[in-house]
Image (tube, rainbow, N blue to C red; front, side):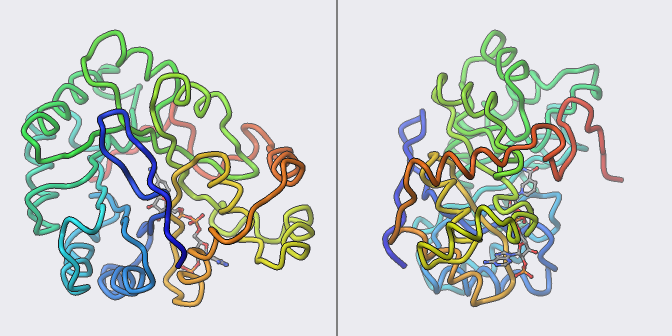
Length: 282
Ligand SMILES: NC(=O)c1ccc[n+]([C@@H]2O[C@H](COP(=O)([O-])OP(=O)(O)OC[C@H]3O[C@@H](n4cnc5c(N)ncnc54)[C@H](OP(=O)(O)O)[C@@H]3O)[C@@H](O)[C@H]2O)c1
């Protein structure tokens, strides 16, 4: 793998622009998948309490033989735990499951504005505690829209280092990315290939043929050139390898514009709208 660029965060730390996502990887397969990704050069893993595989992510990192500090690990606060005391217990549980004394990045997974009396502010203030005590080296949010972020800016002290949101060619999420760019919040793009949905697109396929790469690689390269942080998920070693081979070619401005032009707005979402999503697991 060619060297992966680091993205600078607003708290002085850095994050590898390419990582490995483990959503929907069976816990039984997770340690091996993480180990394969690390062997292939990945140094950034994205998990969440909600994915049920934090323990296996920790095992995979340890089994790689690398030092803990050589791998950037993100996890997320599950939707059931937004109240401060629950969040404190949940964060302890995340560290215990991973078997680490810190995470590199901890996120509020969803804002849940229709739950908890609309209060994600006290949740964020609790995240600030984890940042200040050093157990979360960086803190951020996921699925926040500009009006959620404006509220945090008004009512809390630490600006989120990242906002992890759905972004891919069919849902370019421009207003959220623009808010982040303006306020120093790095954008992490989840479902970067729309869970495979963009792979048969004729526009991307034509570009892929011309540059001699796959449609997945071209799509991931589009993200990289936009400045997004990406962590495609795969349990297939050949795909894990190929998804990292995106730093040895570039797209022209015209290619970039054509791919961005595939945006379908709201109709392009594969996941829920953060303003209405209210799922709290049992
Ligand atoms: N914060 C949030 O709310 C949120 C929501 C969703 C996702 N995420 C994060 O974002 C990560 C990535 O998103 P995602 O897992 O939803 O979707 P994704 O990475 O866009 O797509 C994963 C799917 O694409 C397939 N795939 C991967 N590479 C491929 C390639 N080179 N060629 C063909 N098919 C390929 C995988 O199949 P195989 O595995 O069978 O190879 C899998 O079915 C997640 O793992 C998670 O870490 C966060």
